[in-house]
Image (cartoon, rainbow, N blue to C red; front, top):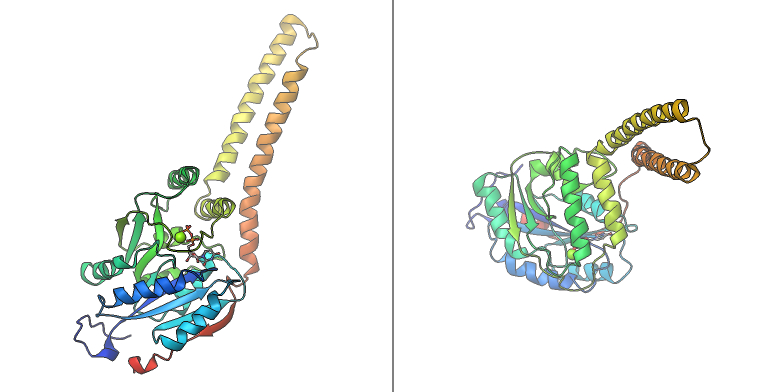
Length: 331
Ligand code: UDP
Ligand code: MG
């Protein structure tokens, strides 16, 4: 590994590389705006050589042609294009595996992750001894109230039931050292919930807070349903509490059943047995079978995840890569 030299006066080919991974799914409007703002920040980061790695996550718009075109003029941009839309988690993994830098950042292309924070984040890693600097938005301005409500409830829930801490509002936007990324890559699971993985690997993480910024261009790629599935992935991936919950239900209903039995036997002995209570019986049957189905479905979620893990399918498939000819800088 290269010796790390942080002074701007360092000779060019010994500068450490900062790989910035940018997942893109149908982002034709956002890419050029993003590159412009990164090139401004580049001027404040003379201590590192920035390499931008765009991961085209199976876009169906002009994202890939735009990336190919960028490569013709820019010497610090690479891209990886996946064979279809695998989701942001897969796109991030593709980027992390391809990154060569000593420092590695992940950020969105829509400028909701302010590039101006990068110099400060790098500084915290180099001078304050952190292995990861993560970001968290403290407001959710511009987001629908229902979405915010569900997001908040999700973080509360997962932190109650999982040992892995996931901070409310934490973004995927972060800057990491090589050893931190190697640790994340050593987790070979198929169902990847990065917010959890980043926390699980440990090391010292600094949290930087910022105000929510609206998207620079284009639309969000996360429907409510996609977010819901993502939340389930998080819960199933980092906690087995729902399984314990179904055991708890089992015990509670067993106790209620015993009380009910005692009640019925005593009533029969004292008052005889007039036929009544049809409606309440139906309600009880429906209620209890509902709980049973719910518990079976919890079991099913874990089984489904285990099933997918055992298949050992690759998380993503690369269709095409493009590399700028920046080797002359590296020697
Ligand atoms: N993204 C992706 N694959 C997907 C969905 C999203 O690579 O299947 C990328 C998207 O291009 C963007 C980032 O993930 O760079 C965050 O997506 P978005 O801005 O839509 O999410 P939000 O900020 O609304 O949570
Ligand atoms: Mg966004």
